Amino acid sequence: MSLSSETSGYLHQEVLKNARYLVITIDKYGLVARQECPGSRWRMDGLNTGRPLPDNLHGIIEASSDATAPQLFPYVQLTDSLFADVHVLNTGEEKQLILQDVSDGHGEEYKLQQKAHEVSLLLEQQAELNRELAAQRLEAERASEAKSRFIASMSHEFRSPITSIMGHAEMLKNSIPGSTRTAAIQRASWHLLTLVENLLEQARTGEGIVHINRVPVDLGAVIDDMKELFNLQAQSRGLRLVINADLGLPVVYTDELRLRQVLINLLSNAIRYTDTGVVELECKTLENEVQFTVSDTGRGIVADDLERIFEAFTRVETKGNGAGLGLTISQQLVNALGGELGVESAVGKGTQFHFKLPLHSEADLSEEGDLGGVSILLVEDDDDLREMYRIFLEDWGMEVSAAPGYQQALEKFRVQPSDIVMADFNLPDGKGTQLVEELRALSPGMRSILCTGSGRMDDGSPFEPSCADALIVKPIAAEYLRSVVLSTLKTGQ
Amino acid sequence: MNISRQAMERLALQHEKYLDSLSAKKSRIKDCWETIQSEGWTLDSLNTLRTEVHRLSGSAGSYGLNELGSAAQALDRTLVMETELSSLSTSINELIIVLMAAFDEAIELRSGTKSEVR
Image (tube, rainbow over all chains, first blue to last red; front, side, top):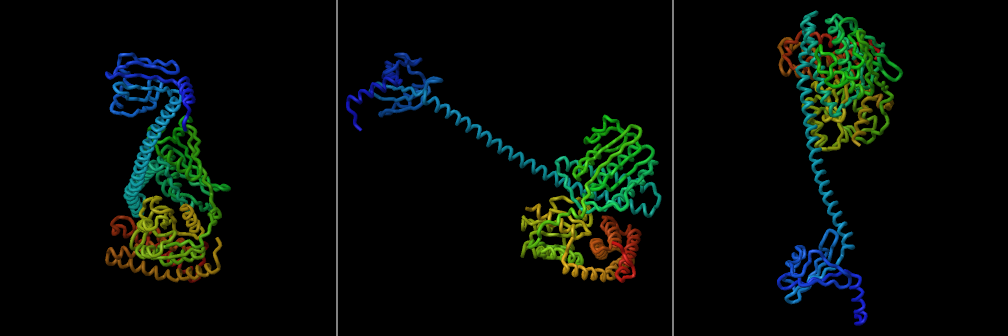
């Protein structure tokens, strides 16, 4: 495009009139020779004839000293609020700096740049925090894993010798009827076992990791065992142990180990804090619940202490032994089992602890779910049991593969992995837990069920969820088997 | 729990088979124990006894023979104790006697000379 000289001249005047320009001439000595302001009045502070340029502009001169073509230095900050594009022209021995005020436009752009910079810094900080958080989470998970492994190991290490002592004491009791020494060994063993159980439970529940293993529990047998356990203890303190249980107590689907632990804690306390009279264990069936009550004619608890008694490591009496964990653990376990532990007490008259557990009938066991086409590897060395399970599982539409031992199971699984494996804990050529671990490595999505003869592993250690996805206790009823298989598969979805 | 007629028939046959096997199971445990009593404990005899009793403790209850299962469990718990079993021979003997009685009761059930309420 070519403009006429008249137009060009007019444009030149208008631009100069509306824009803010400052032209600074620098002599060959680098000093300000003159400054001119075409258009509007603009004088810059710190700019004096015969003096060097301010530092920020002097730096620009240095940077452009060798340039022959005009140089543009955009958005140079002259003051806090003054920004200019600086054009540098070399005109022989002199240089000319043409400063064009871009403060208005640049101000906004500068603010945006500043904000972008701040946001960038914040994002960096956040990323760093996220990295630290991830590292700490990993550390915490590792620590938690280590702690779980330690607890599992300690469980077995503590229980094995204690169980052995108790077993021998039982044998001695049978061979030396009426011996007070064997009775003393039994009492001390039970006390130690209870203490160990409570400590380990506290370690578990401190991390919120109470795992409830619901199995059919014969309440009559549990009550009978409590009588067997505590009759002698009560008698040795001159107390009478009364068992008041409904005839024909139902089978309840609950965690037998945890229920026993609660009753042992409550009965131990009742006997310990009762000097004369009676300790009573009552078990009654209500409409949809079963109620347990442990009461005594003991010293009673001061009203102000009734809340504190459930705090960990708190004992409201200085006499007697105990770590102050029994009631804390009991409350946590009852909650986990679906109940609530209540207490009433009067000083000098006695104390009563009570809780209710929901009564799950066999009809509540979920039969909903289709097992058709689900493949299962059944590992059981007893031919009779293996055949019985096969009949049920096949009747439910499952594809059953069976093996009598570890190695055969492993070989079959390698050829054709199954969706779920059900293995006996004790196999003739290895442990069911080890087999599950090996099969999991081959097929990480596989679900697993371990079979034992009690609510524990067959070596006495408690069931740890890391061993398998579920534990099933013999004898195994069909409804129970189906329910466990269905729930195990569902948890894997 | 509903199971098919075919499964019921299979279960009935399996149940009969199990009851028929009781005499043999009883004999194996009895013979093993008599060997231990006369020749002392060996690793083989211990393993044989443990295996037989452990299997019985798991299966008897599943086939509705609760007393036999309980007797086997009591003996099973004693046999897995990590101790010198020769020191427990008296107690084991008592438990074996209880187990044999439970076997006899279950075998009588098989022969139909006694009824049992499950």
